[in-house]
Every structure is written in structure tokens, then in C-alpha cells.
Image (cartoon, rainbow, N blue to C red; front, top):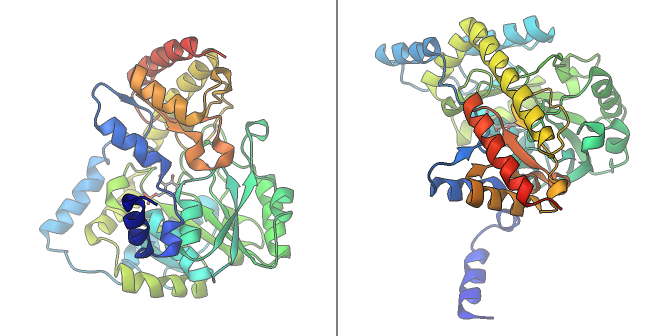
Length: 397
Ligand SMILES: Cc1ncc(COP(=O)(O)O)c(C=O)c1O
């Protein structure tokens, strides 16, 4: 072993094993490379290209001017919990008690982490689709659990099947984790498929963690809130947030809705690690729910226009892409180039200055695909497609 390797392994010994086990996010590497380059069109970062609607920002500014700069209740402002409760009831017909069944978090990111830490004992298993959002397996592992993958593919529109989930249930299975509309594929799940998962979860007495951060971003289909399905609300931990629909990624507000015992357990961790989500951001979230609807509809309409252009464009240049009906991602196959998804992404960035994310960053079944985020202007999408066409032309198998 070289001196460098010895000192590296010594350093690793100082770090907890469960952290050493995590691999760095495959997305970050590309963003670091991208940051050092000029003239890049980014289809990489998964966030809206809009600024937060001004009336939402203004509500927060006004609260600061009034001196509302203290902590809120650990659970979050009661008014915000009331608004979320009202919104979930009006939109999906599902009822949560603002007093004990809702917790305001620092984005869905925190809600996901709290969920896993609240429900998992060492070795407990959580079943999830592959590919999946980058934080899903990491949060499970950080909480001492074991992620168990269910392969999904373009052939079945990246929807996860109840029978495939059931086949992976063991005595250690604690929960099923799903996130539809999905990052990175843009897949949505039909109500029937979700009903079948609910039936499996009920029969095996499992929790279902449903990350519905992209619930508002659907195109020509309806989003089904998992908790609204008959007889499953008690088993469900519903995660939602403001980052995507209201273009509020930087405000860091999300929430968890679940039975009062689960929320109490999550709140225990939250009170020691976070205390309360940022106060002015909670005020902004209240305004978003009260009067942000027209902005959401405008943005969704715009994403839809871009979606149609990118999906058609990718298919035309030989990167076959199933029609994503949600979120703001296209997930084309790059099989026609014969490149691995990392090679494709790195070469495309260096040669044509277009940033996409290798599908392998989202799990083994993401290999052979790249994620293209279309939350960017139509002009940029069209220019990116021109550059990608040139690139693909040079790399035909
Ligand atoms: C599927 C999914 N869940 C959760 C998050 C985290 O969102 P937040 O900004 O609310 O922490 C993201 C962010 O990209 C996401 O794509």
C-alpha cells in the first residue's frame, strides 16, 4: 500500500462506515465540470428556470420588515399547516389534522431523511424503483436501512409493478418508497397501478412513503395522491413541497403528512436537528398556497410546450424517448450511440457544451439513458437539440 493509500484509509477510519458506504452523487461531478466551462447549455440541474412569483417573495419581504424573524413552532407555523391541510383536502380529498398530522420541513429533502430515521431499525429494508431520485437509497442507508431495488424499464414506461414489489418483500421489509411523477424519468403512475401497490402494502402491513414533490407538474393526465386511495392513508407517509411547482427551490420548504404517531416521531428528530424551518420561507409558502395557483398553471403550460419540443426532437435524432407525462425531465435511451451514459454525458459536455445527467447516477437501470431537464428556455432547448444531433451523428453505432 502506498503512503497515500495508507493515509487515505486512516482518514476513512475516522468517518462512519455508513457514510463511507455512500458514493458521491453522480450529478455533482457534472455540475463541478460544468461550472468551470463557458457557453454551456444546461439540461442538467433539476430546477425551474423561473424566479419565484413576485407576490410570494413580497410576502416574505413584508414579514421581515415587520420583524418576524424568530423561530416558529417545531412543527411549523400553524397557519401554514392549515393551508396545506385545506389544499390537500380540496385537491385530493384527503384530510390531515393540522395539529398533529403535518410537519413543516426544510424541503422534501429533510422530510425524506426524517422519515427514514424515524421508521428504520438497522437492517430494515425499503423497496424502491430503479432508477430513482438520487437521495432515496442514500437516505435509507444513512438511517441504517437497506435499499432494495425493483427494476423498471422504458418498455413499461418506468412504472413500478405491484407484483415486482411483492416478490421482493422479506421479513425485514419496512416500507415501499415511490416518487411519482418521477425524477429522473418523468413517469407517472396510473391510479390502477397505485391501487395494486396499496393492496400489497396493506396485505403485508407495510408503510408507503410517497414523494409527491412533482404532483402539480403533470401533462394531460391526473396526478393520483397515494394517500387518497381507499384504506391506505394510515400506512402512507406523504411528502410534498414547494420547490418545483412554485419555483421555490432556494426557500427550502417541504412537508410530511402522516398519522400522528409517525409525525410525532419525525418531529422528535426535527426538533433536535433543525428546530424549525426558516420563518420567512414559511410565510412565502402560505402566500403560495393562498394565491399562487395562476402562476403554477402558467408555468405548467410553458413546461408542457417545452416537453413536446424536446421529446419530439430527441426521438428525431435517434435518442428514443418514451413520453414523460410528469415533472420536467425527458429520459432518452442512448443505445443508438453505443456509449455508456457517463461517456455520453462527459463527451457531449466537452465536445458540444450541452450538460445532461448520466442515467447511471440514478441506479443501475438508469444505465443506457441520460436525464435531460427541460426547465430551460425553448431557444436553449432547440440549440441543445441541434448540438446533440451533431454529436449523435458522429457517434452512431
Ligand atoms: C423526487 C425529488 N424528491 C425530493 C427532492 C428534494 O426537493 P426539496 O427542494 O423539496 O428538498 C427533489 C429535488 O430535486 C426531487 O427531485
